[in-house]
Length: 416
Image 1 (cartoon, rainbow, N blue to C red):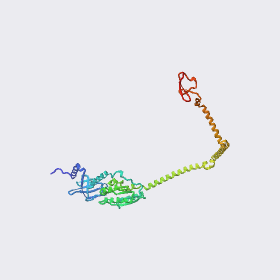
Image 2: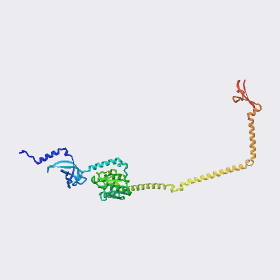
Image 3: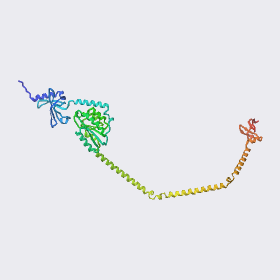
Image 4: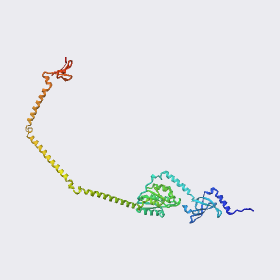
């Protein structure tokens, strides 16, 4: 006989301690297929995870607020969590912290690879980004025709900027054909002379949003001549389209708010500017009116004749003086002319010329008398020392070289 028997609780506690002390079970990654899925209003998710040979129960508390997809039976998933013993039933189960669809890892890898490729090609460069127009007249939207995204966009644009026309280019936004359909509608939109193009959809899982991570969609957005706003999913969602677009909006509603200005604010701003302009204009008019009144009150306008009358008198005096001076000048010149007419100059000009000629000959004969050469002709000589004429014997001394000039030549001699 065994002396001691232990209770079920102790056995369960012991097993729980063994499992709890195993570091491999404290943080474990498991993949499998879901079955018996139950998501309660409390937000807790209960399920069974199985493969071909085994199964384990699992629970995720608050799953409703953490998951981006709705778990279903038969869905293959990747789970992160820990293994603990559930004491009430003496079973171990999986406590889940993260759960995602199997295959998501491949999608993330493809996402990063394409992101790196396009970034190296320069599709994300800011230098290629086009400016979003401030006051658009026509905006295009590539999205599902019946989705919440188009309703939110239209409502927001009509509220904020009712002057703008919104054109829908309906497209599939998820599924195998979605990417090609999105590309087609982007290219088609360029025929409509749009100011801005919004491309997007509402939120969803990574698989739901994957069309906006396709390379053909990214290149279509990059090649689009119209400025493009990407609006895919919720704030936490990022797609390749967001990086290549000219501007990224967190949600479709946010895209609409970015695409158009607030009409009421602008109208109020214009009214304020108009009011301020009117006040400034009226103030300027009042100031100029006062200046004009002051100018008009001056003598120039009240009695202009009195202002220029003295100047007119001065002008008359000047005119009279000029007239008197000109008359006097004319009279003096007339008298001179009369005297000239009565003189011998005009009556007998031949006598005047004869007298002038005789006077000239008389003066010429006087000059001939004074000519030194004529003196030499009469037998006189001219004595010079070093080219200077000797006029007195006192200028000479014994030994001086003397040049004596005759009528017909020169003789050099020496004073004894």
